[in-house]
Image (cartoon, rainbow over all chains, first blue to last red; front, side):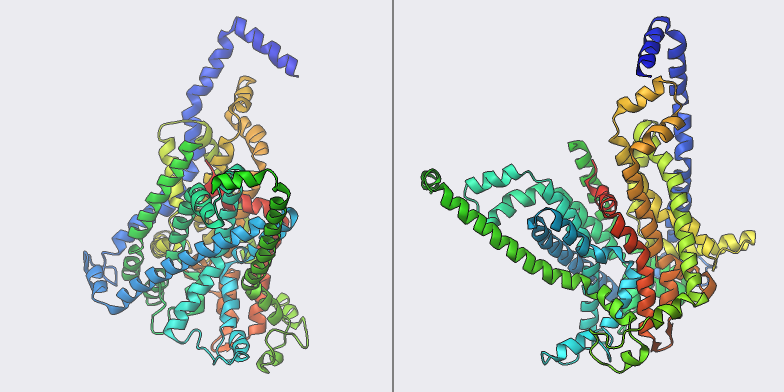
Amino acid sequence: MADVVVQQGRVARTSGTRKRGSLRNALGHKSTVAFFLTLPLILLIVLLVLYPAFYSVYLATLNKAMTKFVGLGNFTFLFKRETFWMVVKQSCIFAITAVVFKALIGFIVAHFVHNIPGKKQRKWRGMLLVPWVIPPAMSTLAWLWLFDPSYSAFNYTLSFFGVGPIPWLGDTFWARFAVILVNVWYGAPFFLIMYLAALKSVPDQLYEAAAIDGANWWQRIWYVTLPMMRNIIAITTLFSLIVTFANFDIVRILTSGGPLDTTHLFATWAFQVGIQSSDIPLGACVSLFMVPILAVAAIFILRDVTKRGNEA
Amino acid sequence: MSTVAIDKAGPSRKVKYGSMSRDRAWALRWSYFFLVLFAIFFLTPPVYMLITSLKSSAEISAATNPWWVFHPTLSNYVELLTSNQFLRFFWNSSIVAIVVVIITMLISIPAAFALARMKFWGSATLATGVFLTYLIPDSLLFIPLFKMLAVIQDLTGITLLNRWYVLLFIYPTLTVPFCTWIMIGYFASIPKELDEAALIDGASWLQTLTRIFIPVALPGLIAATIFAFTVSWAQFLYPLVFTTSVDQLVLPVGITTTLIKGDVFNWGQIMTGALLGAAPPLIIYAFLMDYYIAGLTAGATKG
């Protein structure tokens, strides 16, 4: 088979023109072919992502019955509402705290897993990634049951230590703590996997060199591990920031925004306002407030990803 | 300090080696200790699901030790798996997830091929655009999409709201960008000589794709398939907004809305439902863990 190909190639080189013509033909068709191959993708993005995104801006400028253009009326209305500012504050607290703890736990656990030799490492990794695999709506139900006020497994366990029953989801502080805890539980394994992959890519020689220079473990992390992982840490953190900031499932199932709207995030409040109270323009308006933070994070991610692309 | 270390290195090598391995052994012990603690934290909810699912409602309301099953029973499983309503949720979820996977692959494989191999006008911009779309969350688009569907429904008379099949069009917005993105990475890593050889042998672009790119990039394809499936299976916000009738619901929404009746929480059944709903992704994960992880890390670590 290979012989035949080589021979054909030789023949083609001597008699030439027809073969080269068909190649040029293929190249001529290339952009047309490429256009049709990417057409479904372009249609999907334009019709179901870009168009709705701009439609959302348009919707945000209408009155509740969607009959009249009110300009920035919805925005000024939101600015005057106390709940809105509470949602802004809670979204920021939620996203920042959760991402910091996810990153920390992921980083620490990744080191522990990295220490484990060979086959066992695979088992531990497999076990620790389970929270990320379970659909969040399902696992949040388990947390809801763990937090249950009257039959709560947590309060039952705590009672042995003499700690009184904690109103996990009934009190503002504990409810905020609970939604963050569940988010950390769900998201930390993602960081763990990313950091573990990054740790494996750090060459051993660097650590050996550091050890010969007399670096202690802290210096090894600070001067070798962190600089080598910087890019992955940045991308993972920014990506998680977007996902956490836009989180819906956990808060919706755990508290539905309560007590007294203190655990609402942009997504859950937009759902309550836009779908449940059917004030679509105001709901669209609320969700649009996520855009600035998402955009900033997206720009930084894009910069890092293209930088990686150039390095490779 | 450094000179002392060098002096020592020669004669006392054995001692140093021993102390290093002793350090290692201690590090390993501490690692195991903390890993056990973290594993308890990570695995408590799923284990608790399993414990509760094996209890009868009488045992749950008796408020005995919540961490132990005194009278294990499979009645919750039997009840759910014979309930038409629950099977309906399962069926809806399965059909939606499977069809979305197929649609996703049909859109993203050709697109990724074109973006990875055929440099055409705007191809770099489009690749960046695909990545950016992946970063747009569902919670930003559910309100305009809801309104759009309502408007289209009014204009054409086709019922779109409160129908499970509308999810077939919506879910690809979540799966296609990421799948295209990682497939671009896998396709780009295939040596150029391979497809050039095919082109010279007279293969068309389509043949190059089906005969060379898809077989060679099969691991990436599996990773993308797993991703698309798990995302469609787990999606909660879109079905919550777009479907309301009991017979149109998918699993996550069905469990959270129908098993919770008023203020009465039948926790045994809820946990059983949640566990059964978590089972398909968990089973896929158990068997295809390496592909799953490859897909997870490909998004950020690809060149």
